[in-house]
Length: 373
View 1 (cartoon, rainbow, N blue to C red):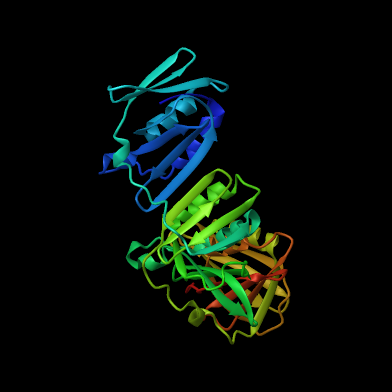
View 2 (cartoon, rainbow, N blue to C red):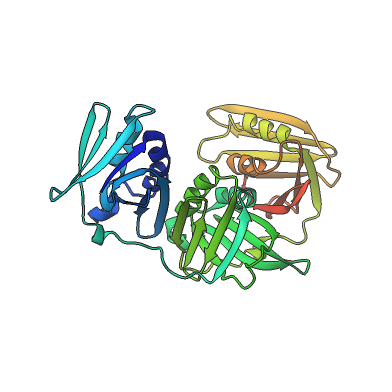
């Protein structure tokens, strides 16, 4: 294999694929990226056995062929070369090495057998549909902050993506929860998604997909089976195994009889919570919300840091109530609501779950468990 390629053209796909590779690997081949050159294009492939990213880029191919080299080392070399560099990658026959040349820089990397490189791609995925980049971004952004990081409850370590109905209309719904908060967002069911399996998309795959969406304005093609999910972009395909588990019946934790409603301008609320939380202890991060007629008082107390209170004018006319929340959770939810919109808190009492919605957007719903403060 021998190719010539511009540094910037190589750096972008290499950044995508190398981020899948784990820093510590007991299987040497999984630390490598597979490079395949043919017909004026270079294909790059990396995997951790649970997720697989394939990307291709145009280049000048002198000798077609394929090779595997350490992914992170190659990325760091290309990243540190001068912008605008013309890079030559060449496999030295029978040496087990690949050379990298750019201007007066020369590198030589060890290679491993291409035949040993595993692949997740190639399976037929029966469910296929298309989402716009904006819709895919919405599904992820409005739920991923609530994904659990507790490894013992592995079935909560991802986003639950499934088909359901709302007001007799079929919808695609994404849900995440860590037991303290729940995020749910939905949109009309895309063509081709009817009958799709209900799946749990792992946190690592969610984060990699989100990075790729940022770099595309086009549509995202999604293929789905019971145990695999494939996201296809312009020149990039990400395939991931799914979490093998049963997501809990989240509908049971969404309260139906909350009767106290508070409306507050989201930007003012978020900034006030952030200021008051400066005083709360690092461990609990608790902030108390005290509601009276037309007024919300936010307060925090800490034996070490002192006290803080802030008042906001709000729309609230139900009976007086005090309820405590983790300030970080409040801010995470407020971040999903447009700054100019009002956040709607629907409460029952200080010990029951609270529902938070965006007054201007009914597609998302958040449930927050209160804290004792």
